[in-house]
Amino acid sequence: DDACGRGKQGEVGACPGNREISDLSDDACGRGTLVLSKVGQSLEGTFCATKGCYVGVVSAGDGSGHNSTERAELVKRLGASGAKLASEEWCGPSSKGEARATCQGFDVTSPLVVGCVDGTKQYAVRGIMAWIA
Image 1 (cartoon, rainbow, N blue to C red):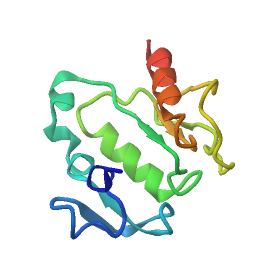
Image 2: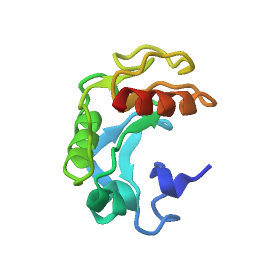
Image 3: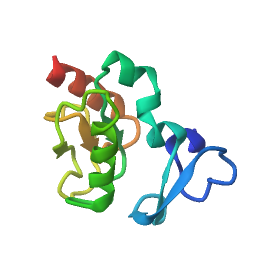
């Protein structure tokens, strides 16, 4: 469990460089304020921005739900990073607020995938790669 790399709520003090975004809520991990890791705050400072990598999100959570401000903020940050965000649409078992489910066999239609139960996120990553190709 890499709480610092994920920007886990309640772990800001234990994770130097992580930052709470005070005006954005995050429904994950018992609800709270959105926390961004160093990478989440400054993807433009990574090799992906200079090399033009494709970026995306795969989560067990739902990004605070369909049309949420959290999802909009994540899309904004990914799109402004200099890396390639191939779509701003969200897909996955929880894209419209449905319950989590396996992402094995799920038809991925975007690099932004939410609602993959633990142990199945790797299938969403493969799906994103196939969708981009």
